[in-house]
Amino acid sequence: MKIETTSLFKSVTRLNNKGFTMLEMLFSFTVTCMIVSFLPLSFQLILKEQSIENRIQRMEWEVFISQLKQEIQSCDHYSIGEGILNITINGVNITFEKYNTNIRRRVSLQGHEIALQHVKSIVFEERVQQIYIEVVDTSNQTYISYISPFVQTGDSYE
Image 1 (cartoon, rainbow, N blue to C red):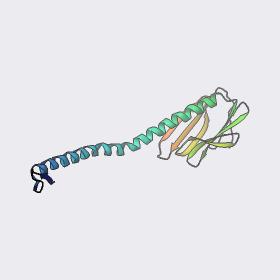
Image 2: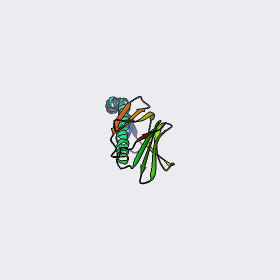
Image 3: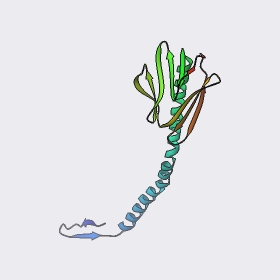
Image 4: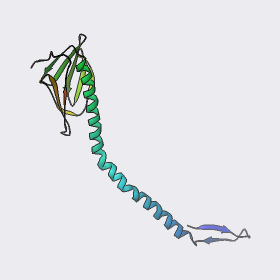
């Protein structure tokens, strides 16, 4: 880096190159070390992205089961079919079914509310006065839950 200095005489100028190359080198080395020190942290975040996705899917499953449990326990009647769960609450029919890679909730066969995402398959079964729910997500993780309804009027249809 060249610095132009002036002397007392305005017509005389000279260039001074002393002392700045060492400061420039130290500054660039410091910046390089700071950038390199953040690389392991960024690699760690990239590698942990998959586990974050699994945690989000697990939380989504918990919310889905919680809402489904609340609806099943307040229902008047329920019936289970091939991948379909029908619930009747105060004369209103609510259906849970797989739609593409989602589980959707429909009220009176209208609407399209996504209840759970990234689903490969779902199984609804009635087992020993409980509703068995098994979901396999797109990353082949299996989630299983049992819900005990207060009414024991489940009918299975195919």
